[in-house]
Image (cartoon, rainbow, N blue to C red; front, side, top):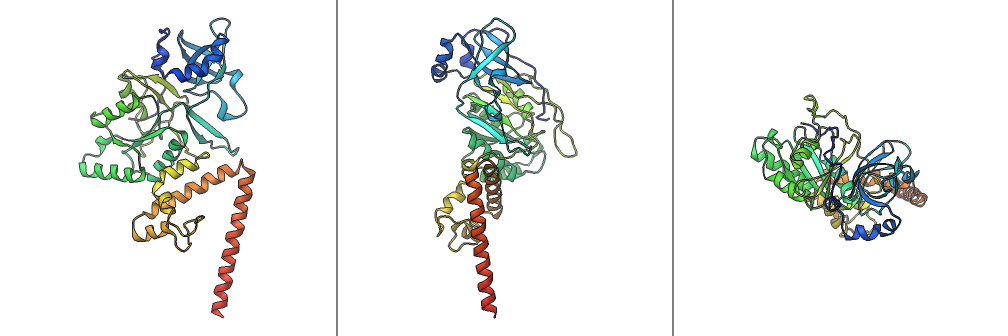
Length: 375
């Protein structure tokens, strides 16, 4: 079972006006849309974007619309799956999306390019479901990276450990769940098996029924299998993961929003090859909340938790209260996020250079003092 998939639409070609409520329409969205309604435009939610075109579910049914008028140079402002938009009514072809409503949340990562750009994966998401396969060894650092992006988006993360049937020993499975719970403070962690069913899937279905959920994870994590279970039918194609490394075959390039039979909507995404942070400082802080709390007890307010005297974080590592792996992962993600932000923030770049000079001066003074003692 794998998360790689291709889309086959289950959205009806015509639908009653109440269909928008099933996709998350509420009074706040209606108020935000009022100026566009006065212009005679239709409200709708984007269920798929593909090569400058998008599928939009409206009260008049699902329509195909061109995004030429809402495609700015900023990649974070392009229309994406999950957006609520104002689309032209029936008439000339092609129809155009004229605007999209301000997003409540946005799941963003950095691109793999050297242009320091962010990429928006989904908009207006309430729950970020992070699928992690138990068919391969757990990578806690990668889970922390996904969690940072999820918290930063404004959504509530949920970690789903898939293919739990491959861990038949209950004690081992419980240990794996506990490891992830320690890595994800304040985040529900569910172990599920699409093959055997179970309580974990019931809990996930209940979570997904409460708004918009996005499924994210690596190829082979079982996302599309989860989607099919939640949808109650084989809507998303599934391919077997490679036995040699547990990775799925990456075949899908679109993100698809589908209404769930029990309420709520689900966005299934292609497997991610890279999970780069994008201005996710607060998200990193939430993932490592215990370190942020410990830092409040450091002697210096700007303690870097490296070698400073009176560092409560280092003391916790020494006593075993804080795993050293957690601190190293925290440092790594903070450094990465700082580099990303600095590429687009001249003031921050100057502050970083100033801090490097300060640390260099401190190190030089320490070395000179040491040489003086040795003489």
